[in-house]
Image 1 (cartoon, rainbow, N blue to C red):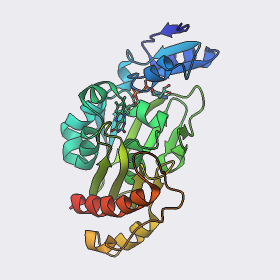
Image 2 (image 1 turned 30 degrees about the horizontal axis):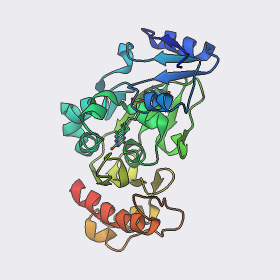
Image 3 (image 1 turned 120 degrees about the horizontal axis):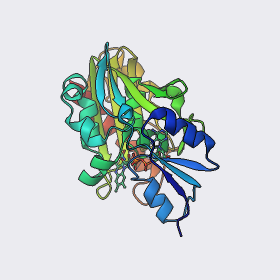
Length: 264
Ligand SMILES: Cc1cc2nc3c(=O)[nH]c(=O)nc-3n(C[C@H](O)[C@H](O)[C@H](O)COP(=O)(O)OP(=O)(O)OC[C@H]3O[C@@H](n4cnc5c(N)ncnc54)[C@H](O)[C@@H]3O)c2cc1C
């Protein structure tokens, strides 16, 4: 049987004090991962702190040369937002390619990055665009946020409030999707902007990583030709029923060239 206390605070301050005071509490966003985890009895929290009624965690706004997306903003909202489509079209493309309509309408950017699934799309966006994660306690650069498979720099009771993306001059995202779930077998974000020239790869390894060889190659000119011969070794890449490490290594090169070409 499920046996937890359900809380639905109306403010970030209330959510923060509730999760901090819970014996073994869990934050609930859209439930796309967490509800399945509970149903499989892989977690049994004492308290669920539902963030769904906190207006300050939702929405998208411009902040100088950055776009700030609230943690409880759904993938569908990001995909359809006029400002995101204009300023960072690669991010809208990425959000549009997540899962199916139900997942895009319930899943959130905060839940996705807190979960840090190795096949999730958003980690490539955050690292590739040089984003900053805002929490109720601090700001964390994307490079230091994703620390390992399903692991992040977040403390147990820390709440992501928003993600700030500097607007790049160029950015492109390409993904080879699992045909069933749409999770990334391999996804690559390539960008050039205020955060520098960055290439981030998701799906291929246990955690998102930057591809420094590609970044060096692109510094001479941002074109698919510049990265024609860039690749990765299969050593250390994921290997499962969906794709071998060797196939993922091959896909990194292909998705890299598509991402750079998509950036224009
Ligand atoms: C069928 C299916 C297909 C999918 N396909 C894709 C895909 O193609 N690409 C992709 O990237 N993802 C995919 N996903 C994942 C999806 O995009 C969700 O973002 C992800 O499941 C997290 O869901 P959620 O936002 O509802 O968070 P929840 O499930 O509610 O929470 C997930 C975790 O994050 C924590 N959390 C939530 N919000 C916060 C916060 N603000 N601060 C701190 N911690 C928080 C929770 O405590 C929990 O541990 C898929 C999921 C499903 C079920």
